[in-house]
Length: 531
Image 1 (tube, rainbow, N blue to C red):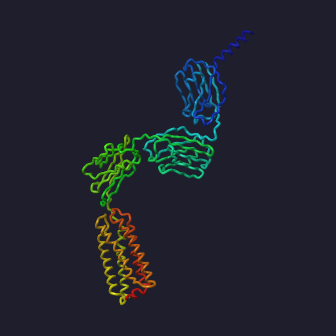
Image 2: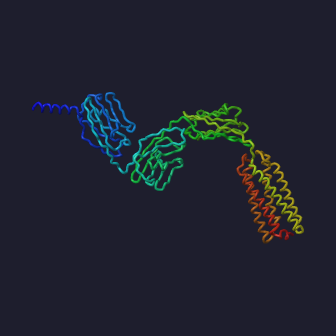
């Protein structure tokens, strides 16, 4: 009997020494406000002499998520729990607690299995959440590094616990440093942003899913700290991301070719850097090449030019270069058709851009339609004037004074001769001084019919006086419009206001036509009161 009892006691003591015991912690309740989540696991009867005697495995449900091999001092973990870690010094004292980032720590059952030489034990802890209603959590992205080689910059801000069902429940504010740069109000679905960040935008559909990331054009995205403040009903949170640049390539506006005309006095070959961030001209250097020949070099550190004799007019704007404008200016007689390349260097960043210079062939100073109309309208005005003169002579020859006949005929003849002279010089083709003179002689005579209205419609009472005033005013406006168009076009290589010349001449011609209709059919009293 005593032998049996002794055997049972020895067996019990043996089992106790082989079993690792744990503090009785069945669950852990955390809040999302904690930066890290600690899942407790405390062994109470471990007596290791070194880490080499220990081995630890953590499970989430049935999935092995973390292990530590003390004999090799190595960790192993799965990607979904990449933040998992323990304190080896604490583990040596029996604390095998697992620390996780709050974004990876999922509610559920976690099991730790500890082995010390031949002894082992395991404990299961249930992780529970009791979240503050006013706290919004974000994915742990503290910085983002970009290059100038991308068109847009995306500054990440992803909410990990958003519950919104409608965009009206959400709002976001983005702050650069201490400056508010963008606000989005979901209830009104409206943006507000400052001019220096006018490209700033978010995706409202992505925001509803938790993505409040800010998109900026590379020219506006400055290095520094950006903070997004998200609010969902009564819950809110903020997250800061540092934007960093690591780039070696300069970007240019995509201008591949330029058409030039013979009439141009200077040619500006464009080269615009869209991603320059220089603060001093000493940071910059520039080289311009024609085909394979270096034609201009500028060194910002010494602020000096070098250029070859065949391109002695070559020049750039230094203030413009500091702002990203590296365009080359040449006199027209030195600008040759071909490929021009600008190479810009800013400290350790550089880039090159090629523009092909092409000759504008088969061009006309004015579009052909405008050419035709500018010539036709003065001739029609002349013909209509002579038609009116013929009506006056036919109906009222006996009542018209010689003075009026001389004034009308001389003025009409002068108008006709000047128009013929102008038309002979204003022929389709590229800009020249001859064509410029021709345009002047076609437009300026349009004032003559205005002054002849008095002599055609003599001062009288009734309908004739009213007609004279109305026609004179309208024709004067047309003539003024044509002269304004002439002013803006006569010395322009590629005139933009030819339509003003055409419109003005059309009005002058139209008034002559209306005057003819009035004389022929509406007022038989013209000329009767002439003394």
